[in-house]
Amino acid sequence: MSRPMPKPGILEIAPYVPGKSGAGVHGRVFKLSANEAALGPSPKAVEAFMQTAARLDVYPDGSARALREAIGKTFDIDPANVVCGVGSGELLHTIANIYLGPGDEAIHTTHGFLLYPIATMSNGATSVIAPEKNYTADVDAILAAVTPRTKIVWLANPNNPTGTYVNASELRRLRANLPPQVLLVLDSAYADFVSSADYEAGIELVKETDNTVMARTFSKIYGLAAVRLGFIFGPPHLIDVVNRVRDPFNANGPAMQAAIAALADTAHYQAAQAHNAKWRAWLTDEISKLGLTVTPSVTNFILIHFPSTPGKTASDADAFLTARGLILRAVAAYKLPQALRLSVGTEEANRLVVEALRDFVSAS
Image (cartoon, rainbow, N blue to C red; front, top):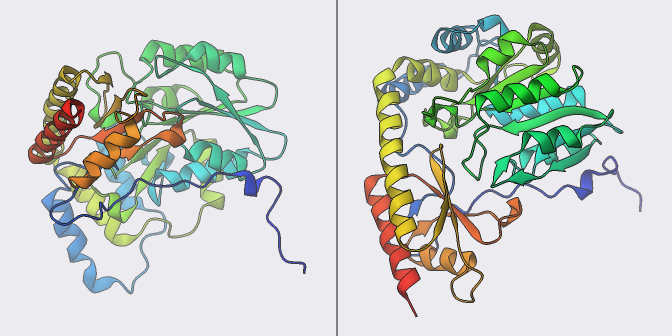
């Protein structure tokens, strides 16, 4: 029996599988698998969201003008060069739809975000993996992977799930040595957590070039993951094309009002940064004292490595923690079978995780 069939290559795509959200146990559950905001959203953002409830029958502003202007003010960028969407993921897919097709190639690194090969392969293009060095993107390896067919380089900076980053000088060396027709897509979802002096989110690079675009999200430090909202900042020619093909009204009204309020609440933003910096360092130190290796992170999560010894593996630790209502993220799909990713949580959650890991490590 004949039936509609997807384009060649679609069925070769491994679907994105999010981290588990339930533990299947009685009592309290601490979800530390999705890098969600430890302090939650700004109360002002919640209030702004609620105030839109009486007008749910009205379409939102399809140009997201007010939100783009708030973004422009916050990040010192031209609102005309911003596009908002349903999380940064939708916009990354849109970029892939525009610039990739059969015969093209797009590069991402070994432990890069799983969305990149999905967006690449769904357009019939080939996903090329550039090896990393010490769980960090390697500029030389990326450049070595470039061919005449390369159209996009996907770079999460900082990277999920490793928590590492490429410094500003290396980022600029990458851009300078990529062919001009190759689009460098900087996924800066975790930029707000980085305090390193040698880090660059990509704003200046976008301003200075016409072949770089930066993606940001409101899901992380702003705590608005449930409403799915993100944006890209790019050169005028790219923004023009994205606006031609994106879905109309692709950013919903309540989400935009919440985001505008979140951007204005600098006190909550700074509190979230301070909380994350304190507890990321504490978690790294305390877990390292247990004899487990932690990859140094600049984000709101850490990557914990486990031995391959039976009974002590990442899978064993995951089961042990889950039984205690502590949900971490298994990252075998990221080619990290012996690691778990831990989001920085509340003080209570952080202390409970360390206590549970101490019991796991010491158990015979």
